[in-house]
Length: 186
Image 1: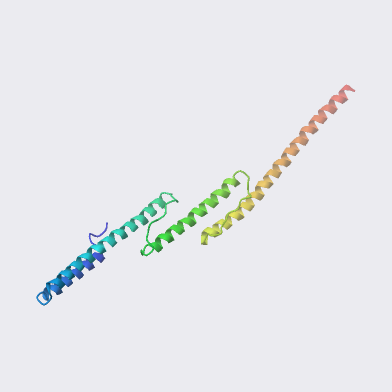
Image 2: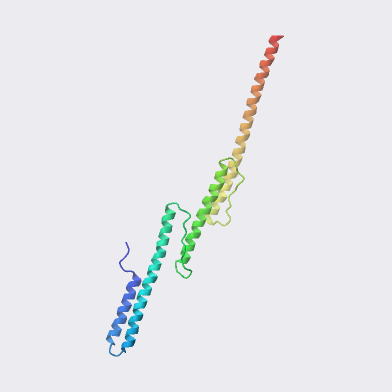
């Protein structure tokens, strides 16, 4: 739960009260026009700062929505529309870049394993552009794919030799049966 008033707002209110106190103590020495200018300026500053706080809250809401979408498994959500001069712009770009890394990693892993499931091992991951553990993880997956391909080929070879052995046995039994028939006929 957030506080009913932010620290920035409390500081601005206190500053306005201090200005009012100074102006009030010197009320009779300051011309009324100057007093009116000071009060009008204070009001403009107060409401302008309130507008900045509302926009900042909007960007915090975008970051919160980003976190919610990420938690729910949506990797397509990005924080958009943060002005370049806004202090949260850099953070928004870093969060979007981090999600790009996660999304690229997941796509690469999915692509190679989807093909490997059907015995197609020609596709390797593309770790370029990824950083840190993402890049290392994809390189390890490539090594695993090489081993999977070797085991797959060995399995195919074993199956082929088993089929060949079965074929030899079948033909041998057939030849023996024919030879037996020929001997009986003689």
